[in-house]
View 1 (cartoon, rainbow, N blue to C red):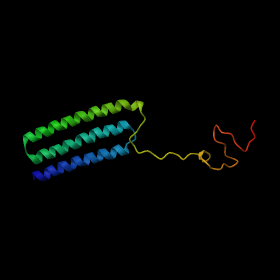
View 2 (view 1 turned 30 degrees about the vertical axis):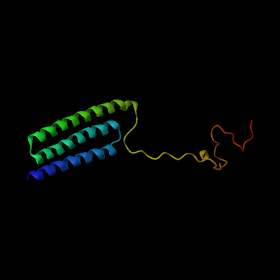
View 3 (view 1 turned 135 degrees about the horizontal axis):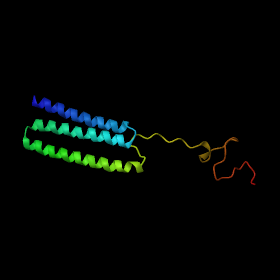
View 4 (view 1 turned 180 degrees about the horizontal axis):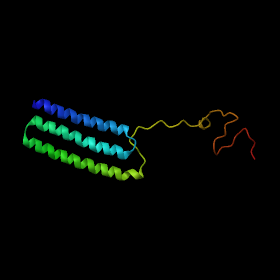
Length: 131
C-alpha cells in the first residue's frame, strides 16, 4: 500500500515536470513560459519528495526532503524574477525559431540577373552606361 502510494506521487511529480517542459516549448513569450515553469517545476519536486518521504517512512528523511523543497522553491522564484526583470529589454523567446527567409536572387554571388531585376545596392549595373 505504501509503495503504491509513493509510486503514484512520484509519477504525478514526473508528469508535472513533463507538462512544464511542454509548456516551455509551447508558450510564446518569456513571461508565460516562466510562469508555467515556476508552477509546474515547484509542484513536481514537491510531489516527488512527498512520495520519497512516504516510501522511506522516516521523519528525519521527510524533514530533509522538506528543507530541500523549500530551497528549490526559493531558487525557482528568485531565478524567475531575475529573468522576468530582463524581459522588457530583450525580445528573446524560448519558443522554437523559424527558418530565415532566403536572400533575393540578385544577392547571391555569381547569379545572373534578368533585365527586370534591379542591381545589387551600392554596385553599378554593367548593362547601363555610367552617368
